[in-house]
Image (cartoon, rainbow, N blue to C red):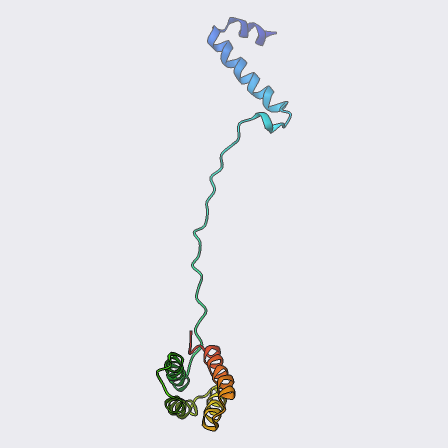
Length: 145
């Protein structure tokens, strides 16, 4: 009972401090765990800065493929506008073929050969098909983007 007697002899503020400490300990021990009545705790969230998306490396294009594809695109563009005659388009395709035949890409060489043969024979439908194949081969090799 000595502790109780000392407690009663304390000044009012001393009693208040002891009661607050006691209630804090008591509340912590017998806490029901129901967090719905407690204030939410704020936690710092660190967001990582978005990493830039690396561009896919461009495929290495041999100079003959690139040059023949660029020439082809210019010739086809002029033909589509109607400012080149069939003979001028044929001459342009011959130039494309002469460059493309030195390409290291077999599909470029084949498509250039087939489109030149088609326009030389006057087969416009075949020329359209093989010219489309040549354009797709250029795109596949990264020469036209």
